[in-house]
Image 1 (cartoon, rainbow, N blue to C red):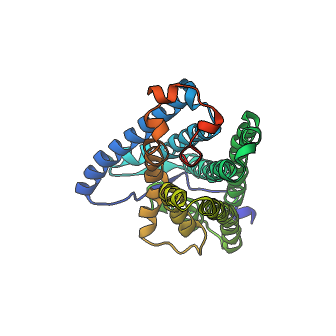
Image 2: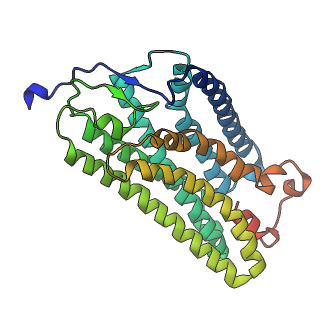
Length: 319
């Protein structure tokens, strides 16, 4: 073991999304535009939520933090991917590869918990409306955000602990546009079957448990609203449908890539794009642009302070 315990690979070769020169030029323009929209859209949400007093509420506090995570998640690999479209030899240093693995699991793990926190906020608003102000206090919201970062940090450090001691002494070609854990682990110079099982179990426990909590919360919300009013049920389902779409687009590709055997498929590249690029751009659209209160945050109707009894429960509590 001592002989193979040190890695001799100093860099990895990234194959990117396509080897076609024409497609790479198209991808350069396409993903450059997407990245600018992601950053500006999420920054707009953060600035608006921070500066507008009418949006200083638990759900917008969590939304602002989600936008910040989205900017981080889209930035750990997308700028390099865009730059690589203009270069023929796409490489990344060993330390850079490890850094990408660290950040992807930090941000995705934190975002999963943030999704659950936002679902919990909706659950309290609908199922316990009289206690909403007490339960969803500023302290509670701060704790929820801190827990999301803590879970993301523990998740990524545990994943890195599995791979840091693996020897890389030969193969260095990563069949993706960034260093993802399954593909890098396959390049190790020893049988890493047990480590692969631990990686799958780690990702599986986090992703499946948070996804189950989200589905359970949506079911409880819909049942609660349905018991109150069929019209409210239709409105709630219409609102939640958009949120569920984001959750599926985020969790679906992640679960497919990480919660299965380490057999890789060509479609894995496309799926990785969903939770690194497309989900961060969908969140501003789903959670903000569809929200009437956000759209009209400068209108007189929302600048006037409201009594709790005047607040439309379904619209606000469901974002």
